[in-house]
Image 1 (tube, helix red, strand yellow):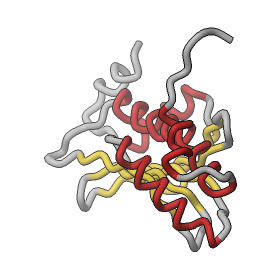
Image 2 (cartoon, helix red, strand yellow):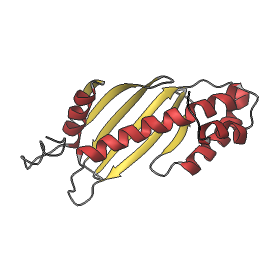
Image 3 (tube, one colour):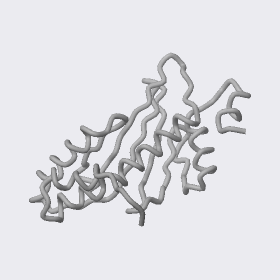
Image 4 (cartoon, one colour):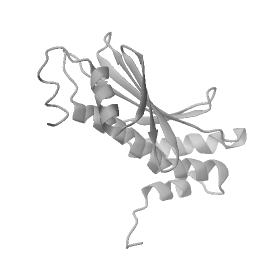
Length: 167
């Protein structure tokens, strides 16, 4: 049975219930913070990402943020912001920002479900996976821009380079 099939048996489907089922299915650590919010920890290659999804019935949007710690030197913030802009030019399903006060890199996305639309488990799973993949892809570029001697454009080459051959 697909993830979608188990939900079409009921009329009342809360998006966070679907997220909880997906988290259980993938064996991700999660905490149901409230009826309308869930927080998960997803292990990546570079680090563990904190992913939070929250449902807003006011504007019928399922909001997702994927965060990871980043504490660049103050003098490198300009390079980080330039690298963020370059990364965001490549991201079509979300965007990065840096929350300076919290020292967090953030990838954000909102799935609008206006008109009482339902999010499918596949859509939600894709949202989360896209966020983690984007964080994994651009993490090395952010690191190179902040701690390496690379320009933001050079740092981005690491993120957009295709690998060829076999290991």
